[in-house]
Length: 148
Image 1 (spheres, one colour):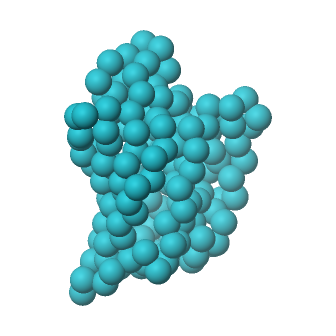
Image 2: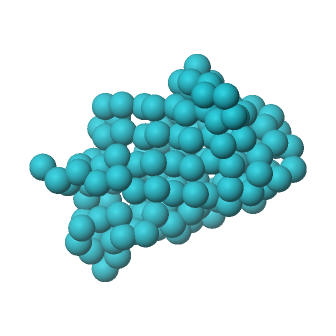
């Protein structure tokens, strides 16, 4: 077994969100696979909330760059783009531990299989908020724990 940790910093809107809106659009997780078209198991997820919002959200993983919708608006994905889905993971408000100026959530034993398309080593991640946060442009960092 080989393990790897990949950091992702999605671009966020700095205006207040409405619950159910796209928190961030499909963001490239570059070279996450060891080989083109490869697979990996998402074993763990760490969310570092630098804005200390502790808001629940759902992460959606895709094997290609899809349009989930417009940031800070309701999702509006097409059927064709929906077929690129690899699965989703819910981050609950209760998953966070407050460390003062930052909060950290850790989800373990996820077991979500991720797969890149042929000729590519990257996947994509997007999110929909479950609350009404106001973030800075880089206020959330995701740390993906993968095994191959």
